[in-house]
Length: 152
Image (cartoon, rainbow, N blue to C red; front, side, top):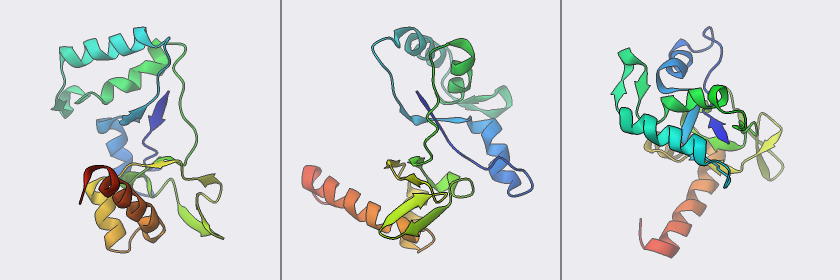
């Protein structure tokens, strides 16, 4: 199962985030799910990464991630996670609007948050109140880290 980045899909809204789709890939390598039947696609991905794992935009490479664009084309059993609450991230604010309805944060007024892709950019946006609905999630994440690994 691949998890889309959910970056901007309309160049008229934000051309920069739209173009990043074509340089960094449609799917995020930060999360994927695999069953015990996934050895063939995982081996293919590993072989592709061993071939070349680098950021070389002019050759269409972005580390291990850009190879994931091939997977749904090459392997019949590769699915795409269409739940917008998966992989909530800094880069998908345009496509995945955060709203608070009652005591729940929903994506596009419909999807509950399943997991968040915390990056330094997202943490900075939360601290600067540009992502106000995600601050509780960051606080819970920090508390969990402190519980298991000590002060963060």
